[in-house]
Length: 255
Image (cartoon, rainbow, N blue to C red; front, top):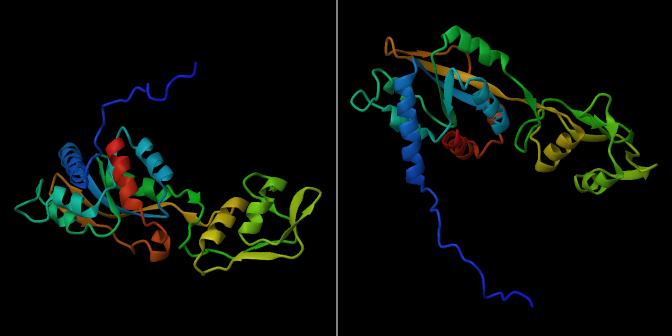
């Protein structure tokens, strides 16, 4: 006999989601806790933000540092934006520099070591809609190739509808999507559309580089803030990253 649909077990437990204020309070608590633990507090920005790369940085520094990437206003308030409100001596000078999508990095490692490490960490990645093309990419006549491996491999026939949807005029040659004539995906210096970015990812063309730009650091020993020399990351490098703060905020709380 079929089981009655009315005989269902309904759970009466329900976990309420954290509110925006609760999340902010949690991040503020984490910021102040780490400010008391570490000797240096760095302010940084990110170019070509990718959560996967940021998690890699967290993992590599998990024993000697802590990264917090949340809402700027919350982090600044946690540090204290005036001498009267600052959580540690001199930290308000760093808090006043928190603008836009930036993060905090706490560590005891010497500044020269930190600067050198982040200068060397720059993994390439795929561009997103809104980024500018760093070079012109043209697909040659013949089979459409994927450059995810060496040597490149042709696309399978099952991918042909997706390639057509993204603007390629393909035909099947022995079961392989092919082109009668060269096709320009993008031109150097021009802003990428969503379709162009997706097509570049499919063919395996990486155009952006994940970079952490160090802006300034606070030192517990002196209470001084040292600003880093050199230009900040360009708008092109940070373009296309509209949800960084929200992603970083959630990631911070789950670490």
